Length: 235
Length: 109
Image 1 (spheres, rainbow over the protein chains, first blue to last red):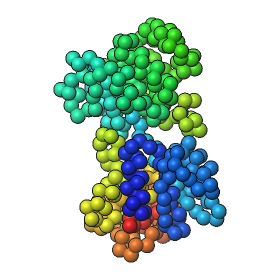
Image 2 (image 1 turned 60 degrees about the horizontal axis):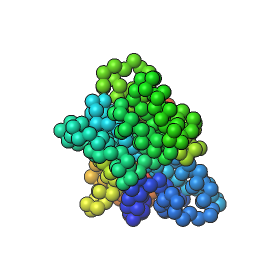
Image 3 (image 1 turned 45 degrees about the vertical axis):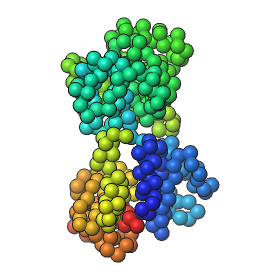
Image 4 (image 1 turned 120 degrees about the vertical axis):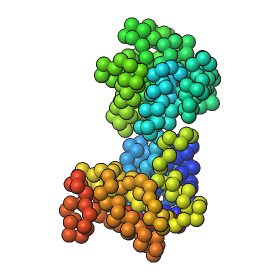
């Protein structure tokens, strides 16, 4: 591998860009293709398909054998609410390899003491998401129980095609949430993507058990989404 | 970007090693058949002291890949390796899971 290509590849990955390293298996030469960047016409269809599917593999083009290694951004979990569940979920999610960011405007909850070592922002989601927009490689978990805080990021997550959108609350509060979001202009199809009540149904009771149920559901959504759909919104 | 997702990332490690002046080989799983422990695209990176990060199998064939990687660092020639239960005559090591994998080993230059 070419050293400059390794640096370019890693820089794109750090910037959460999808990127493919193409290696010519006969000559050992390689090059980096960043999603949206220029591609030779001979490779364009193969490269586009690889970005969509996220699958790495060997392909033969014009008699040459190439290995395409596809790197898509690591999944990211944005948690709305610096509550007890979030304290445990943040630690578990980090162990499972997710980046975690917690947002809560309530400074009594969002304290560094309660979330040591966790990326935490004590501000309103509307302001935070302007600087750090959601994307299709992000899961949003809304757990404040407060519509003033939860509703906006849930709507934003649905519009941006986040691969997972979960909201804490009973069936009853979920019905009223759906009514409010419908008034915000979200379609039935979009609203049906919200996981509520949140988490896989494993009878979770304690905050840690609920965190397990949520994390398992996030992994299920991540691994079962329709790879042919760039936003994963058919999962 | 937090350290979480890239903390033990072999390609990030390879870049660090390279920048600190070490010679580095990169092994990549490029094909798998049957039940393979690590997916296509997985990396193992090795330096010239035999330090390594990442994996190309669940630990079954790493030793052999590291040995080959030392030769790749030595002569600069990339190699294609194949491991699997079907290849017991060619390789003393194999994959107990019953799958087969092909691994491309190259030097970082």
